Amino acid sequence: MSTQQLQEKATSVVDVPASLPQALYGLVEQAVEESATDIHIDAWGTEASLRFRVDGTVHQKDTLTYDQSRKLINQIKVAAGLELPAAYRPQEGHFRWLRDDMYRDVRVTVVSTAPRHEAAHLRLLTPPEHWRDVRNLGLSDRDFELVERTFQNAHGLVLISGPTGSGKTTTLYSLTGLTDLRQQIAVSIENPTEYDLPYVRQLEVNEKHGFTMEEGLQTILRLDPDIVLVGEVRDAGSARITARAALAGRLVLASIHARDPAIAVEAMHYLSVPYYVLGGALRLVIAQDLIRTLCPECRRPRSPNAHERLLFEQAELVPPDSVFDAVGCPECHGYGYRGRTGVFQVVAIDDAMGNWLVEGPHQQAIRERMFAVGSRSLNIDALRKAAAGTTSMNEVLRFYGQVQDRPLVIRTDAK
Ligand SMILES: [Zn+2]
Image 1: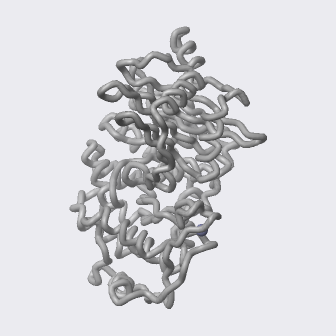
Image 2: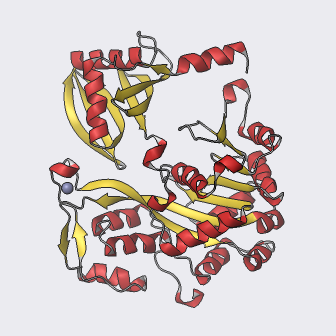
Image 3: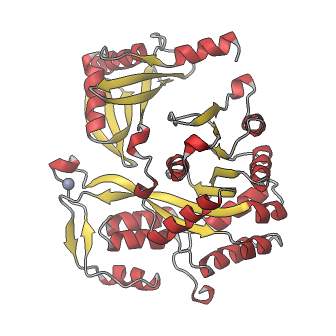
């Protein structure tokens, strides 16, 4: 790294322990207590809105006067080491919020907005101890067993697919908990690095200085790795190196933007990985998304209605006696939900399926074969979680609505 790069790195993280101004300190504290992941401040006219994103949903928290919002944004800029005058380009920085033995690293972006305002986005990064246990991700017993077995074999490609914000990175990191990293050389390439992972050499893409994902992967392969983590495969060069590293006997965990496992396989092929490489390298595909979990203190049971019973029957699940609605209480700050859990489709690629993939089957044929070996769609996993009282039917229906084209039910001829 050049001196200039080192200096940039040194100034990009500004720790301000216990010296955050009261308004900013209190704001982050409130966000932490309400489990918010993001704080948004936007000015319009003579006022500014203060909003939190909690479990993926935006909530209005307060309306600030123009002066209050100016003062707050200036406090944020000072804490994150940004320039005080409004800049033409977005400004990015970090600060750390500390309370006793608790902390949050806060990533800050401030942008100028027309006509003469500024907007601020604060992302609160959750420290690893909150999510490292792979058993807390929301995998069913069957899916967990498939994942564990893949890790025992310790080679090949594991693809983690999902849309943006579906928890792919959390899963990627959590999966490393299935192996003793003290006895493995693990290296990651990420864009950007979000958390410190013990025993993982974390490289960060830096396009500005010409350090691309592809170059990072080539560097990693010279570092004698047993485990390679790939933040997100987005280009052909990275996709090819990722698959070939797995073919060469390493355990490679890579995330990719795709809605279901069949599309994830096709996406790798679209990124110019030949089917014979994919067939040989792939061991496991995990498709995932996130749904909100009900607050156990205030969720309210009721009988499922006719439409809801039909959804369960179409998914070949027994309709439960009760489903639950979100209510809201002091424990969940009135949201009715507390946290999120993953919904998954996990597909193990055995030798037979691997050999078949070499022939380059069509996406729909891949999907049907995946169902035929016992994996079930994300929608069905969401329904199971509603039947267990983990989430509400409203949340399941909202989830269905986001993905109209996602297969709702398994085809009976694919059993
Ligand atoms: Zn509650």
